[in-house]
Length: 111
Length: 116
Image: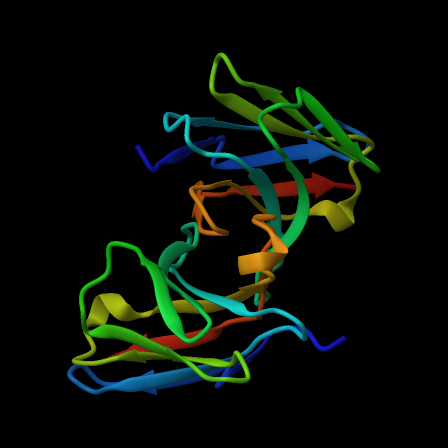
């Protein structure tokens, strides 16, 4: 119930392409869905987040698509750059700023 | 504005020993959460402290304990270390409480614990 399933585990995309990372959840009590970006040796940093009453949110090159009925959400990165190479985690808030995280996607952008 | 700082950055312990990890929260944040991140995995929630009280705990045994101090800094203590405790321990601070449930956590860079 507390799990968030994330796919793919790794992804290689050419520069300028649009990587898409998918997550699915079961617990309908989750009320906030952030995405975190983590570089090697660093802590996760908040990238973008969405609440379940919204179907899409854009911030710069990053877009979250949210499908409440399917209990799925995804991250799209437009015009991807080598600097976007990192591990991306989806997460879900299960109350008072406590997060359950997906297993992560290692993204590599090839120049 | 000072971000979340953690110490030490790296440490090596042997099985059965005890360890204390420290965290200073971001300025203005009264809530601190601790997460364990095993290699190649997502962070797992250990517990959260709000106003010096434990405010929720994940699926971790009692040998994982914590404290929060009046200045909102926090400690994570792990007793009787096991090999599987080797991980990156992340501290995250947030506004919490009366500021509203934003769900936004700010993470430190972590303390890398190796248990031999």
